Length: 138
Image (cartoon, rainbow, N blue to C red; front, side, top):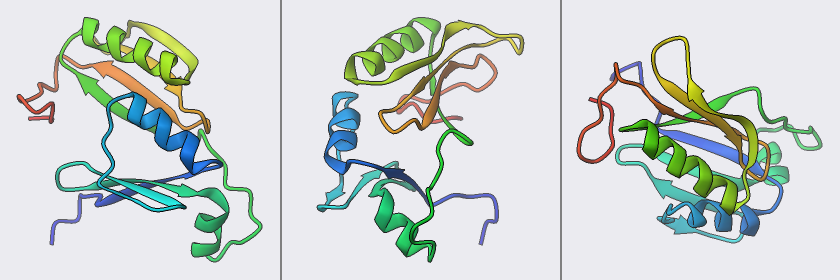
């Protein structure tokens, strides 16, 4: 079994309906949705949204305030223009500005937004990591 892999990333959210609406406004299509959890297929991995209190209970940490913002997620795009388009779409869907897109010292182009629960996403163009026709890193 390959050690370097992640099969599921789950974000704790305060309001599952609000979070689902946000990600759907960005074009994400749920694979499975229930009252307290939503899963999206990532082509070999899954992305989930889970009601915050229930995630804490599942972790055996009921009553703990699960924090946000200590980890960033990222989406890479094929051009700077695609980053700008995705960034503006995220803001229109309800994201907040963390850092506007700009050229960065490592030679790419990147901006940061926070989803409605404060989870930070980097939207980036990285000329050193080409994408295939499906938008996956090659």
